[in-house]
Image (tube, rainbow, N blue to C red; front, side, top):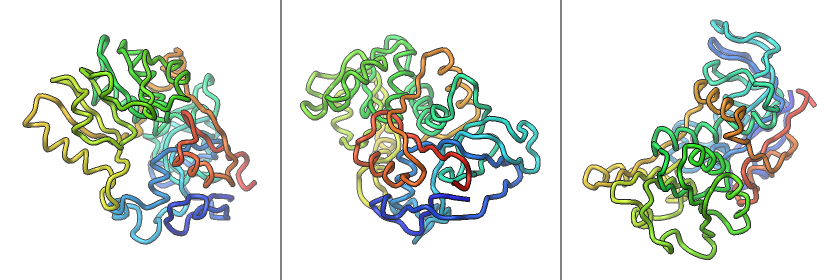
Length: 329
């Protein structure tokens, strides 16, 4: 089958990713094999492509990726099921998260897949799993956003951010979005009540007192984030951007966790997990109109490297999706 193949790590995804031919994978027990129609683009895949932070290589491969085909999110149809899988059958339309999604076929644990409802196209569904689950868990589980909360979301125009704004607003929160000025109307359309243009002013320029700060951009020091947080507010650092080459942005998460027992504010970090339960919640929210997959750009499979480069350079508003088409094409 045709797939995007990565033989080494590198800062430029377009230079390390190239089309190639690889065998169709076989589903293991508890897995499904999916014929991929569309695949999502997210920061997690970019990190796997660069091999940074270096600490991550302990799990993904020291000198080159153990999984040569990148890609996590997908939408498609079930082509085969592994031993012990009874909830899905060949031909079922599904979406979820697995391994090797930038290819004609990909495998995934059945627990991280659900049937694709008719109201979601394959492109829309492929934009949901990693970013949507991360945003949902940040807003619902870690920030515990409630009606009337004042919520500041940093990185509001990106993949996770665009979902987080919608979810917080639908919970009844008053959302202030931090985004580039050119994305002002975009984030207001998602439900934000106010926008801070980070190219013109810092997040503390208008005071603070936010009940919740969700930091997705990952490039501000803890002291600045704490300064805009209410005395008993909650800070949620999503993922780990910037920082040193070894731990990346994880250092801020560690410092926040160590500081929390000694202060009234709660400083925490999180990484999203794709679960069937949360995929179903996202699909339901999309059906009711409280959540919209904001896909601004699509790419051909051969342009997967360019898609990741555009993501890293901040050229994608909301989500981008790779259209895979027929396997072997």
